[in-house]
Image (cartoon, rainbow, N blue to C red):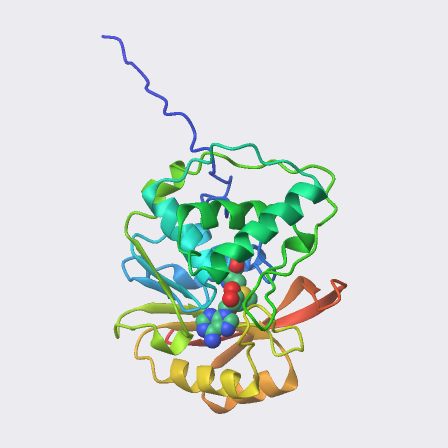
Length: 275
Ligand SMILES: C[S@@+](CC[C@H](N)C(=O)[O-])C[C@H]1O[C@@H](n2cnc3c(N)ncnc32)[C@H](O)[C@@H]1O
């Protein structure tokens, strides 16, 4: 009897650790924290993973839960993910050139102005701008227009075919709004990664101030299921979560991108309940 070994082609976005490559570059992305979060996720795999601040999806693509609810206040990231869920294949050539960059940035901002930012074209432009712009920043002015300048990169490997994400996203739900509008089920495993308690909070035109940090901590502490929060270990954050009865552990964060694009080392605090 002959045994036929069938070997499937590896998934194009698979990473050696069992996760998948995030499609966008995202300031504050937590890929580096995935090994720690994986330890906390063990035993919870049957739960739905909820990320009220999903950002660049580094965590959900690291843990790869069956079910997930992924929220962010950034409508362009959420539109991009919604398009990936339907199967996105970019058919035009993305060119790394400042002239093209500023043309596409203008087109993208025109779509925002015309309230057409929830379209396939907007998702494609958002991807191009995200990969080509400065430092992977996602910054908007007061009018909600994308104002990141052209970035200097040695080489960009643009992805055109995002269809392989379709299957991964199949049972993941995406929503766009303030974290507090995320509808939690008492059994959900919540991982919250808000903007840091530092001046760089221009992810969205709304920003994220100290009142928002307090509002988040109180909202999280009311959840009945497992909760994990990560933030920069500032004195105020440590005191806030300590007082609410969270267990605190610390990790060295690799680098922090601040408002001028400089990178400095920082300590991360991970606050947990029911883990
Ligand atoms: C540190 S990033 C999250 C990064 C993500 N964990 C990752 O690994 O890519 C913080 C995110 O919070 C989002 N955000 C800011 N204010 C928010 C709010 N009030 N409600 C929900 N999301 C918000 C930002 O758009 C940003 O994507």
